[in-house]
Length: 383
Image (cartoon, rainbow, N blue to C red; front, side, top):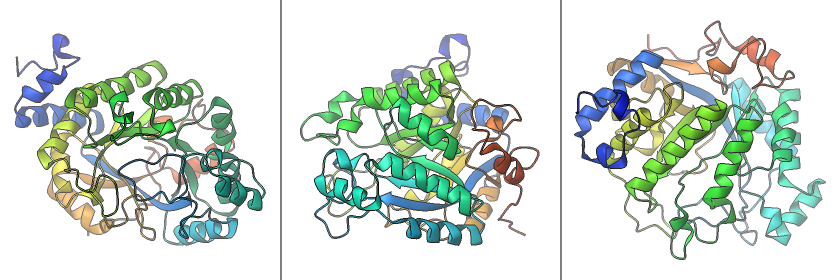
């Protein structure tokens, strides 16, 4: 049974099976799928991060990024600030600009609404769309937006100015929205709302990034259910370009600061489960800055390290520095992989006639992509 896990009757492995099999067997199967689909290439995106606003109407128990509007550190950054960060990123060889922001703070807080009005806007999504256009007009960078849950109209507004979009599903567990749990009083973390955004971006042909946040109180079964939910969406629409498996990290000052972090074995088993459950053409990613043993993730079938910035911090996990790209390349090579820089849009979505990328953005992507769809100008070498 172990040897035949990927035969027809095991094409949909259960949570029980994935929990009971030896980790080494799972890793062998995950690596086999990864090598067949992705070869020895391990990718990353050289990007600059722009935290458009750190205000949010959600109050997740694990978050340090979000600031209440009464906090002096709460802000919506200005057009000039966006442009300054973008131009610095361009100078440092970045190809992607990732906008991260809290979800619709103006719907909950009058101060957030007033701050937007001062900039001439009534919604953070409208402001985001204009800042994406600014980046397109003034730099060579490709915008990627992490704006959380979105309506169909908001997706339509963003698609012409964003090469790709993303939102972590995190979990399909409604249990975590109950009092005392990680997603209590977080309207945008209701699983149905997250799944609706996955469905809408699929219907509207948006290259999309999603993923799991593990170790926030979910069960193993809920984790597996979340992976199957993502797989179902991709099989229907073909738009999930990458899935991130991110481990919870305790931080001072958060509600969950005493909550245990997932172990390395837990992370590896989840990555293997993701590789076995998800369609193989979905890129599997794990953040290299959230564990000093990150190179071991390569044994669990990942093919991507995600975004790494030479100039901006990880605003979601500010205590964890990005690895130096040259050193990451060396450790990747020691494992038998070859580090290559990609664009925010994965190669299979880059075609002359594609429904996934707006025609206004496509020429810029063609200029930056080489024949295999990865970045034309690679910024790393170990020689």
